[in-house]
Amino acid sequence: MASAPPVIFAASRRKALRQRMLQAQRHGEDAPRFVLEDMIEDVRDRLSFVRHAPERSLVIGDWTGTLAEELGGEVVEADMVADGARMAINLAAPYPVSGFDFIACLGLLDTVNDLPGALVHIREALAPGGLAIASFVGGSSLSALRRIMLAADGDKPAARVHPMVDVRAGAQLLQRAGWADPVVDSHSLSVRYGSLERLVEDLRAQGLGSALASIAPALGNAGWQRARDAFAAEADSDGRVTESFEIVTLTGRRPKPRF
Image (cartoon, rainbow, N blue to C red; front, side, top):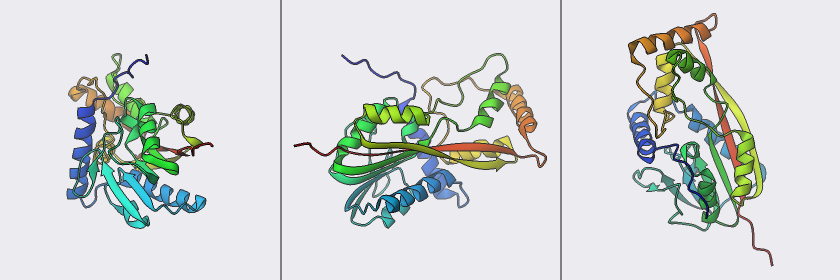
């Protein structure tokens, strides 16, 4: 009997982060969305390259509706949180809809406790031969913030940035989940910040805060000052810190039956 996956992330915190992000994006004209925009552009490029023109698609995680508007045929939109025309999808359970020849899942799989299981659910929602593209923030991300938080915590480090999946682990996950023609790759976005506060605001506005089940203790005033000092120590001659966001993309198909 297979053991249950460890509980690293709290479902309630994941949902709350997503709800706050959606609210921030709706009410903030200048709210950052560069991570999602990059993922959407990447999906466009990949579909063009493989010349895949889906007739029935499922788009999960694109709250802007941009990708759905560009895809031909029937498109079902979904998210972790029901939002108008978008249905709610539990990534940790079988989907209530299936038979899609294309599924895009954007920015949601990095905080799933049972990632192999989530990938199986995507595979099962595809029609035989259907294509899936799943993108999320990966293991090499936020290296500057990790160093800053370690400095802020001093001799009592706390888990403030959750663990992330790297490219090598992604390839193993696709094999475990039974995807055909699996491909895993990544690229990085670099963003320069003039303050630690702006970096944290950008993360929260894009739903990239911590969803760990174990909540780290508050930094306190002294801790925040150490964090600001560490940020200043990381800064270049212009007073800015370059932060990286690695986008990991998993691509594959549901195998066709063999006769």
